Image (cartoon, rainbow over all chains, first blue to last red; front, side, top):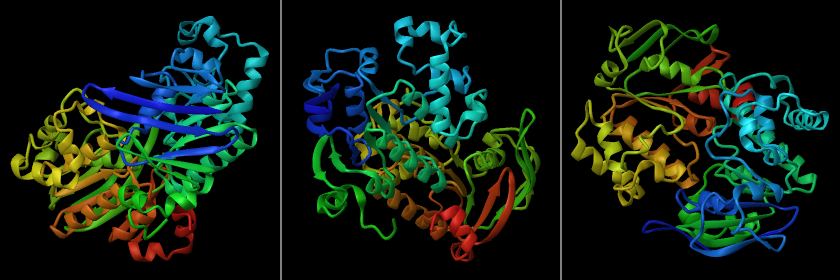
Length: 251
Length: 230
């Protein structure tokens, strides 16, 4: 589904990602883990075309992505969430979810930001209601981000990523800052989304969650892949334990 | 060390914290647990005077309720805020320097900070905004320690950090406690924080609904089920 081939990213003199290779298979939950600063978010930014690599290519269903713009990526049915919430504070939940709708990009994103399309067609409205029900935020559609707890805001962000009916979803630390109840809800959302045949690429530090939901895990350190395999293989890899997991006394 | 009486924090007509009272003794680690939106961050903001609050705050038996944020920092009451809040245009080193602006020995503390987080030393000339999310979190914790806190308040210090770094931070907190620093800790990782805490308060919709020794809470079936997920 998604193939990362020989990607290298440099920020000035710093090499953030070095000749990275990775294959994400259709319908799987694939996790990307590694120490802070390993290059995980940078790789996400390459895939979603926020930054340019100096070398390498990303193929999605065989199509090279590097020449595409971020808007074109969304129309290829790839969506993402961000590490720090990136919601529009001046918009309510309904409008925030709508801002992720792919058809918007045909109309131009500015008409959305300026709230020029107040009269949503029934199909759009149904989609928004469907994802908000899926994420159990239907009763908060009129609320503004400042009125919602962190756990709910995370759901709004996931809803916005889902509204365009993506086939590949990239989640950047979706469980960070959530308590265990909310984490298990995120886990349920993943499984639900995955059951619909969607592919998930996940960056996350909560190992209980990663180990539970992942089909495959890739481990990065200092921009390079240091291990890859099933959760059990990765959890017992001495190098991964040394640089990332540490000796676990608890889950 | 710190005694808070009937602290309330309101945002417009939203009552985030409703007349809560709690205390931290010298050398104690005290946790505040509770769901997102329970008022934990607002309680810390009240103690730091980052937001307006009602009620009394006593520090070493002196009423500091009228003190501004920087006056409280001068007294050694330091907050390490949630979501990093580093100065993104300043370098790592400049951020750390800011931490020791009002108090703390820069030369001595910067060595400790770099020993604790070696990656920050490697990145010392880099703009803080160019660090990865987790590195910014390390910087926020290091910056708080630069001011030689007497009472250190940490709002989710482990957020977004690799497991091995989370372990380091929790070990560091235990060492700080041993050196006599009092710690007020807000963490989503309730199990880990209770393990190093002496006592804990549980907040629900702005009110303290339960408080006890950390050991007792760790064995409390209801607490286990609703807050620890075990």
